[in-house]
Structures are given as C-alpha cells and as structure tokens.
Image (cartoon, rainbow, N blue to C red; front, side):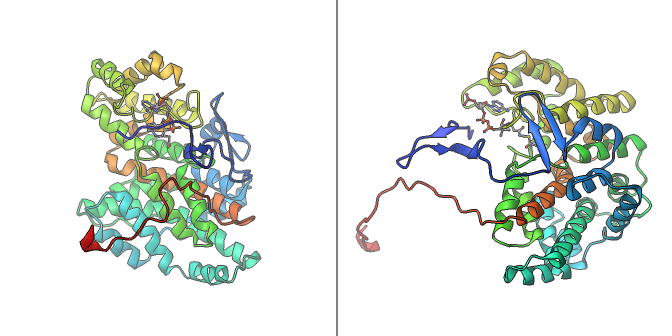
Amino acid sequence: QIRTSGKVLQSPCGPIVHGLEDVLIKNTTISDIDGEKGILWYRGYRIEDLAKFSNYEEVSFLVLYGRLPTRSELKEYERRLKSSRDLHPATVEVIRALAKAHPMFALEAAVAAEGAYDEDNQKLIEALRVGRYKAEEKELAYRIAEKLIAKLPTMVAYHYRFSKGLELVRPRDDLSHAANFLYMMFGKEPDPLAAKGIDLYLILHADHEVPASTFTAHVVVSTLSDLYSSVAAAIAALKGPLHGGANEMAVRNYLEIGDPSKAKELVEAATKPGGPKLMGVGHRVYKAYDPRARIFKEFSRDYVAKFGDPKNLFAVASAIEHEVLNNPYFQQRKLYPNVDFWSGIAFYYMGVPYEYFTPIFAVSRVVGWVAHILEYWENNRIFRPRACYAGPHDLQYIPIDQR
Ligand code: ACO
C-alpha cells in the first residue's frame, strides 16, 4: 500500500509541504469549500440550492461565465452545446481503436485528438505562441470551452457503444445534456429518474476548487499549451483511485462484499497499518461529511426505493458508512464518506458499467477545468516549483566495463 508519510517532510533545504496541502496557487471566484462545516458554493451559490432548483446546463453556464443566465442566454447556450455534440471523424476512429481499453484512456486520447483537429484551437495555439490573448482569443477560448463541455458525453457514450460492438447512437438535440448522454449510451430515451440522477451527479461534480486534476490543468495551461491538452492531462489525473477513480473502486468493494454483515471487516482492514484505504472515504479539504455525498445519498435512496437493490449495494454502503462513522480511527482523523462513496450505486443500477463512473465524473468536471484555465490565463505565470536535491554531487564517472 502506498500510504501518506506526513503533512510536512523535513529536507536539507527546509520543510516541504507534502502534497502542497493548504498551499494557495491563485485567487478564484469559481467555487469555495468550507471543509470544517462541509459547505460548497459555486460562484457564491450553495450546492444544495443548485441541486434542488437548477440543471447541468444552467450550472455549467454559471461556473463558466460567473453568473446565472437569463432565460434567453440559457436557451442560446443550450443551442450552442447541442450543435457541438458531434465529434471529428478522427476522434471517432481513436475511440474505436481503444474500444477494449479502459474508457479513461480512450477519453484522454479522444480529447487530444479532437484538439488536434479543431480549427479554433489551432488559431488559439498560433496566438498563444506569440503571447497574444486579447478579446478575439478570449472569445475563441470560451467557444472551445463550450465545445469541450458538449463533446465529452459523446466521447464516453461512443466508447461504450464500441466496447459492446454496438452501432453508434448519434446525439439528439431535443434532449437535455443528461438525457442525451444516456440516450447515446443505451439507444433509448432514459427513465426520467435516471436522467435526473445523471443531471444531479453532473451538477454536484461541476467544480471543486483545485483538486489534483484541476491543478494539473493549471500546470499545463500555464505553459500556454492549449485547452484540449490541458483537459486531457486533467483526465489523466482524475483517473487515479485517490481522486476520481475512487467511485469505481467503491462500487467494486460493495459488489465484492455483497453482504452488509461483512462491512465491519472491510472497515477494520482499512484501519490497520499497511491496510488498503477505504475507497470513497476521506478528503484533503473536508473534515466533515461531504455535502455532495449527502445529496447523492438521498438520491441513491430514492433510486433503490423505486428500482430495488438486488445486489445489496445501498445496503452494503449504508453498513460501511455506519461502521466508518462509529470507528475511532476514522473519527480521530475526521474521515467521512466523500462524494465517491454514494455516486456509483444508482449508475450501476442504470446499467452503466463501473468503468464508466469516472468518465462521467469528467463529463461534469470539464466545466470546472475550463473555467479555472480561463481564470488563470487572466493572470498567467508558468508553474515551476523546486525540489530539494538530497543525493550526492561530483561522483567520478566509471566506464561501463570497469563497474
Ligand atoms: N481509509 C483509511 N485511512 C485513510 C483514508 C481511507 N480512505 N483516507 C485517509 N486515511 C488516513 C491516512 O492513512 C492517514 O493516516 P495517518 O495519519 O495514520 O498516516 C490520515 O488518514 C490522513 O490521510 P492522508 O492520506 O494524509 O490524507 P490526504 O489528504 O493526503 O488524502 C485522500 C486525501 C486521497 C482523499 C484520502 O483520504 C484517500 O486516499 N481516500 C480514499 C480515496 C478516495 O476516496 N478518493 C476520493 C477523494 S474525493 C475526490 O477526489 C472526488
């Protein structure tokens, strides 16, 4: 097990902030987290209100443009998203070639491929080469941002179709972002509760300040590389089990256990030195229950109330949560269920294979990534930290046949 080795590491050059904990990288107006109280705001709005009253189209506009849209702005924004859902033929071929790979690999490659063929991206790259980022380039950047939001669901759904050897289902522009995604995956209009679940999940994951994936996106664009490359890199960071990959791992655990009576054993194993971490539990910033997890738990409860819990996923997750909340190891470290703890259950019962849970996270978070990139470009400086060299100097080179 790769476990943490402390918040602050000592080095010959002085203390090292391990994992950049609490290091500030910029000012932001996109989202804010109160980790002690378990509160999350997007552009000043509480996540609970957005989950209750809004939808992903409106929330993504809010995250990207910094304010809620008027009715006509929203309509126009939705029209632009719908008209950008199709992919470049080269991207479709890339996805086809990676049909048997984990969809996160395919998504990374598909985003890079789409960027290579997007003419707006080429124009922006040319401008950035000479350091130009004025009104015209900003307009291009926002257009690209919207295209990325529009296209990621198509990439994920097409990968699913190819992986199953099925015909592609073209996007339909009379369906919402969430409903169209499920339609492209399964080839039929989704149950309204399933579409609502996807929409809710997309709202809850739209932004989260600067986790590893968003930070990665900053590092890439700080070199004046392009938005597609930056999003491909962010997808690579999201993929890991300590970040977005935890939703897949959590459901795999629930399936493996299969029985709530085995929850205690799993939780206790995670408290042992060198034991496996409990996926979907703990957070760098939240030292309280993750507000997104609270909302999605309620949805998961409603979903299994309507469609049943034949694999005991909700029952097992509830038993694990009970053990975690009452176990001194987790209490002392302020480790609570995070957003990934509950999110996969409804997906699994919708028929979404667990390999697609993290890609759906990317489908949502892409708006946060691009909003942060555009915010950073308003005051860009290349990221270039230092490492403390702790090895020897001036060793004598020994020819290979004398070693
Ligand atoms: N299971 C068991 N122990 C844990 C867990 C866990 N899930 N999470 C943290 N701990 C322990 C650590 O071992 C450490 O113990 P120690 O003080 O005895 O050494 C202590 O709690 C502090 O944990 P760190 O690893 O220092 O916390 P960090 O902030 O570096 O990591 C992280 C946060 C990666 C989320 C961690 O809690 C984890 O690995 N959780 C499981 C994976 C997961 O669910 N990730 C999704 C996060 S949410 C998201 O990305 C959408």
